[in-house]
Image (cartoon, rainbow, N blue to C red):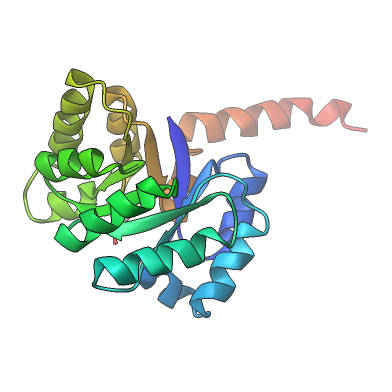
Length: 214
Ligand code: G3P
């Protein structure tokens, strides 16, 4: 399973990239607003050192506007993936961008049929939001299982990008199901290293090795 980092915080992306944990990056308008920089500036900064897929979300409500945004973003770098919302206008835009060989990531997916529609429109990725479904008492991972089964039934090539990840358990469950990608906030990514037995084991080994330290 690939790991994307779900943030527009350039320092955090660099830090995780140095640890070999970043196969790609996903952004959205809220994450870019949080980074406190201009949209184009921050995306280009990320593109200057990330060579894997970088999702950049369109900021228009019409299919024409989304396509225009998508064409503009795709000129910034070869690894740009245009993020498009799941609705009728969005699907029109995905079809057009797919015809233009521009990669897309359909976001705000909350049902298996939305994922199927996005795949039929030609999406490269679909992004089901597991955490937000869990928040309203539905099963985020149940959705991933259903999308995975449907895509397997019809040998659909669209990749399942698990989004709105809130904990390492989400990542573990996504990997067990066989999802293609998890996009993970930096704080959750850092939790993947920790285990109390690892920490105490390192401490003991260093303690015992002290005598030979040069
Ligand atoms: O990037 C989209 C998604 O991962 C957002 O997650 O935590 O705002 O539900 P969240």
